[in-house]
Amino acid sequence: MSTSLRNNGAAAFAAAAALLLVAGTALAFYWVPEDADQGFSQKIFYLHVPVALTAYACFVWGAWKALRLLWTREARYDLESYTAVHMGVIFGVLTLLTGSIWAKISWGIWWSWGERQLVLFLILFLFYSAYFMLRYSVEPGPRRANISAVYALFGVVLIPVSFLAIRLAGTLLHPTVFTREGPQMSASMFFVFCVCLAATLALAGALYLNELTGKRLDQALRDLREAVA
Amino acid sequence: MTTEEKYVTGAYLVVLAVVLLYVVLYSLKLSRLAREVSELSELVRTKRAPQ
Image 1 (cartoon, rainbow over the protein chains, first blue to last red):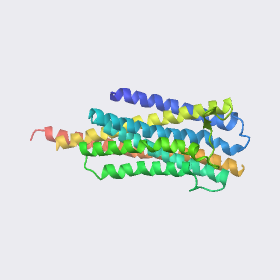
Image 2: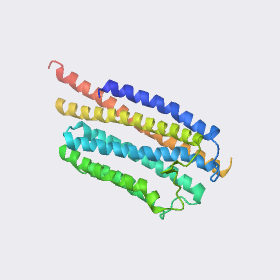
Image 3: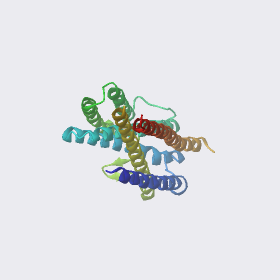
Image 4: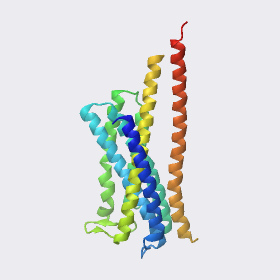
């Protein structure tokens, strides 16, 4: 993708994200009815779940780019995979923060080690956080790109495990909203959820493309400095 | 404002704060890149200048 196309894409994503975030927040606070069980606190759902799904999407995107790197040996995929993991970690932080706040309101505790869904997400988050340590402990070049790609690919295995944990565990605390019978919520709630999910995905897209441009610029400048020196 | 409303608003504000923090950090990075470009331009100009 050319730089101008990427910048236009980032601008389009940013505009969509701004619009959808404002719309999603307004709909969640003022339009959608309160949940019968959880009341007002359930409104965190429209933020927490889309943010968590976006984190998963970023990690999957990073793994896909890592696979492309290993498959084609094209160096550009290394930076794309790295940027996607970077975004995934940012959304992972947001998932943990919003999840903790929701846990505090609903369960009266900030964290529960007994909940497999939470612990598995934490493991996934820590795994990808360690990606940066690994990446910066190896000299730049094809070896670092390959090691980082393999690591990113290993991490993606944790995603279905984390996602399915709640269904397999039959947990009491963490609710299961999406089941085989479909989303367990009203049509208006599902609509607002979709708007919020689109908003966080657009936000991630904008951040990803901006970050990628910045990282490419950084790399080009470093190459240029070496050439000039 | 009830406790529930405070927590929910807090969650939304946390997300906003993290995104804003990212924007600030990105701005700092862009400033550094702009400074490096100007240093490189200066270096190229000096090298091209007749001795």
